[in-house]
Image 1 (tube, rainbow, N blue to C red):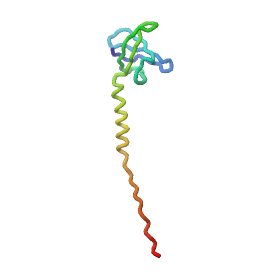
Image 2 (tube, helix red, strand yellow; image 1 turned 60 degrees about the vertical axis):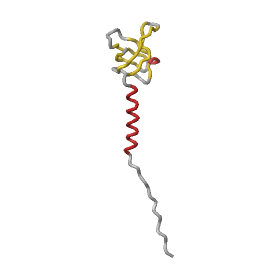
Image 3 (tube, rainbow, N blue to C red; image 1 turned 180 degrees about the vertical axis):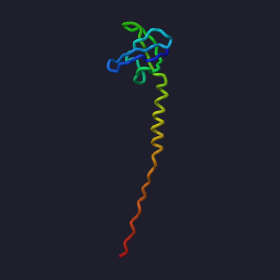
Image 4 (cartoon, rainbow, N blue to C red; image 1 turned 45 degrees about the horizontal axis):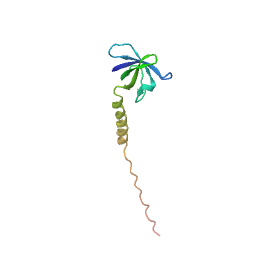
Length: 98
């Protein structure tokens, strides 16, 4: 199932997701979030399981989260490639005539 993070409090480790099918908001605990943090308005995929107090989101993943990581890695690689290579040549001092 897909949805949008309505809000998420990192200090309290929970929040709510609004499912895209229009059903009621679903509780989400940080222990069910895979692959990093979620924040308000993030698009996510998730499953619904029965928690102690009702339905709750499980196996929550940000949509496109895997695609974002390689871009960051590529940017680092490109930044390294753009740095000019500096070669230092040591010149021998001319010999003194005696």
